[in-house]
Image 1 (spheres, rainbow, N blue to C red):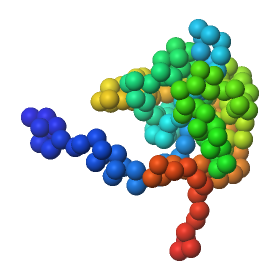
Image 2 (image 1 turned 90 degrees about the vertical axis):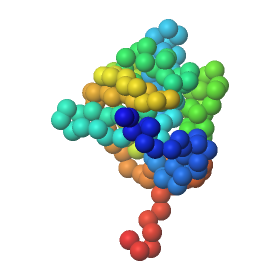
Image 3 (image 1 turned 120 degrees about the horizontal axis):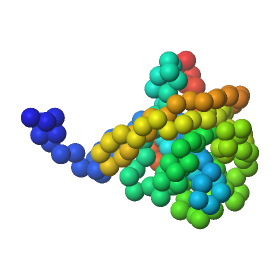
Length: 170
């Protein structure tokens, strides 16, 4: 008997309503599309460290994404950890625009991936696995190189973007 048959079906709206209470960081996953030679990218809120040895990261992407196939074709990508104040970058990379990078300040890494300038850090990766995750794909990637910068993170919570503020109790 599978676990799914033991649990009642969870309505997507209810699932979304509950999960929106959990804040996430905002990461830009970017590559150069080998078919066009142009940068492509998307925003993920599911990015996380998976393993230190070997250095692996993971994130999920909806199966209907039009950006992921372009990124996957390259086999390599970068993750820029967006900083507070980079809401316009987040909105541009979340859009359906043909050229999402038209107003984004970026530079190409030595691995050939777009790094978003002003981000808190970047991580160059090589795709290791795509796993079934229901209506999403779970992407596992090997870290090739990474760098950090100073600043505060851009945070997504309750459908809003903003900065992190330490509580008075801390």
